[in-house]
Amino acid sequence: MKPRLAHLLVLAATFLPGLPIHAEDEVPAPVPAAPLAPLAPPLAPPALVRPSAASGSVEVNGIAAKVNGRVITKNQVSFMLAPLFAQLAAQFPRRGPQFESQFKEAKTKIIQELVDRQIILDEFKKLGATIKPHIIDEEIKRQRQDLFNGSEVKFREELKRSRMTMDGYREMTREKMVVQAMRAQQFSDAPPPLPNEIQKEYDEAKLNLRDVSKDMISFQKIFIPASDSGNPLATPDTQLALAEDIAKQLADGKDFAELAKTYSKDAFAEQGGLQENVPRTDLSPEFASIIFESSAGKVVGPLMDPQGFTLVKPVKIDCGPSPALGKVRDMIEERVRKKKTSAQYERWIESRRKQAMVDIRV
Image (cartoon, rainbow, N blue to C red):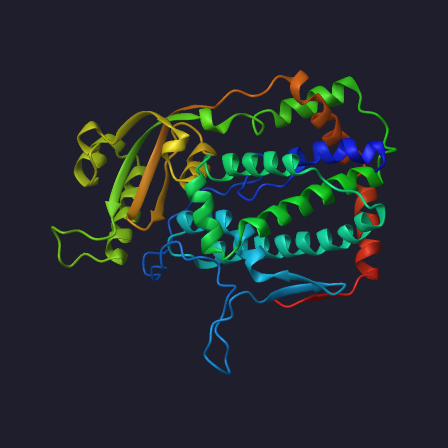
């Protein structure tokens, strides 16, 4: 293996694109939906597995695309979409055009990423290079920390829900690392990063490089359950309508604490919904992703989960520590090189796409 490529394979994990929306991406604030729209099912997984029209049987793991004869499965696409889908489903309880647009865009990007990955893997084969297993293990651990708040249980549940084995996930991770390393190798002659470029990139990236397991947040919360034992006429639709009405009252200037005492159905209602110094790891990954991307004093919601609907106003957000520049300098330098060669890379990958036999089926 070429020395440069071997070095880049070690660095590749730091560039792997995460599944949820990150701070550098634009995260639209949740907006109340039209009150007459029907309520969507809570947090259903992406519908990429469908019944066979001929037999009525269920397609266990169909083909999403083929690239030069190599198969990209629907399970791979589903697994990569799952965290973002959960976040969007929480943000848009009634789904609607915004949900559909963002979900469609995310699915298109993921399929294109998987197609490009297969194209680049063909180039990697020619080099006869490999990635050491412990490097893959470290990357899987990082992804579990970032995407599932470090929970092995949630990670395994998502694998099971997506009908993906651990071996399959390891292979998918290995391929991601290969693609990032090959991309960097292809343009390793990029001009060296300047000190001011390194500092600027670090300043922009350090928040996303932080130890999110150390994140803490204080917030006020109003929880409206999907059903109400005290009101036999209550349905998930009427409860969502109530949550949306509370959101409107908050937008009109009503006091959050007073509304929490009146409407909230949890143990913190009498305290005005206030919960202090809650670790990020105590929250669901999709809920945490949304409220930690918000700002103090801004009302978020209603958000949906299987239990009901939540409005949140962050009071104080304390992010975990970021690594010192000295510890991530190599990675930051590679990020700068990547930006400098992005236009060149796009021309290169586009030429490879034209040569490849690609069949996208979803």
